[in-house]
Image (cartoon, rainbow, N blue to C red; front, side, top):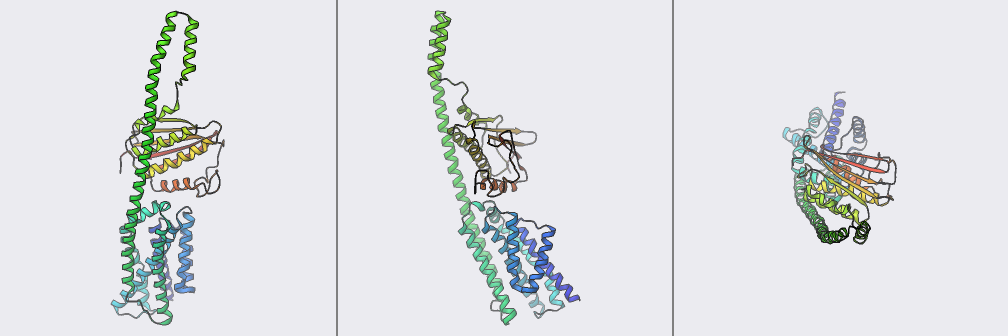
Length: 440
């Protein structure tokens, strides 16, 4: 009876180790019900399938990741699951064999072996904790930018880990059913070599991808700012031309006034307005309001999207009342957020009979936060907002909802960043709140 109880506790400890390591690498939490289901599955497959049951454990973890993050890169979900299976199994095996060797015990089911198996799961949990500290910058980068990383990169990592798992569990099978263990003395070395290779590969590739992303951001920033400067130059030339014409108009009007003939004055006035096509309020001059936006990449994206909207004959209202000099979120994330929201706003507004977009930046010095309000005209008086952030969901057709699901992933990374969405009276409104005006 005691042996059976210890075996159950050993399986429970192993399941706990799997779940802790899985949650630490994937950031996906298991609910109490999910953990209980995992525990039942673990006991069942271990009893019925022995080492081959690990395949079902892997599938359980993969499906859990998929259910939690359907929009994430599927290769990244595979990485979470295969990493958990390999690290937990191999480190537990290494600890068990080291302990039995040092204590001079035989590898068979007895009380001493079960006690060692009972404490063995602590070892992979501790090693994983320190291992993830080394991997953290790279894993965080993969998690944040999985949608931008090509599949070859992830496939290479997953292939390495999957091959290690196949070698590991084949070795278990040989040891249990054939009685030989060709790799017993080399498993630790294989594991260390694999981790070193993985760390090196991740470090090189993430640095390469990060530099590529930064260069892309710089190129986009230069392009946007170039467009902005060119547009400002056009506006400046318009103003110079207007000043010249304004001087001539005043002279003409002055000559008419000298006649003291009201009809002549009125004819001159109407002629000037008709011939010069003067517009006292022109939304193309709103770009001059970007002067208060001191963050160059953000100024670039706002100017680029404003020009794009104006080119599509969309009325643009732009308000930036107070200077905005810094932000507490990553600039690249800031650019991606505004790019997604403004692209969606332009596309939605362009399909309406009276297209319009409003962009407002508000600063609250006391709360140390700023808000961005983006409004656009839309075809719907009201809209069901519960599903718009799901991957693939879009009111504009199939496979068009990627932007908003990507947006949701960005917002999940910041606990001081929020997004409120509403749609009333044919106006779609997004309110972004960024807390913390000082850079981290």
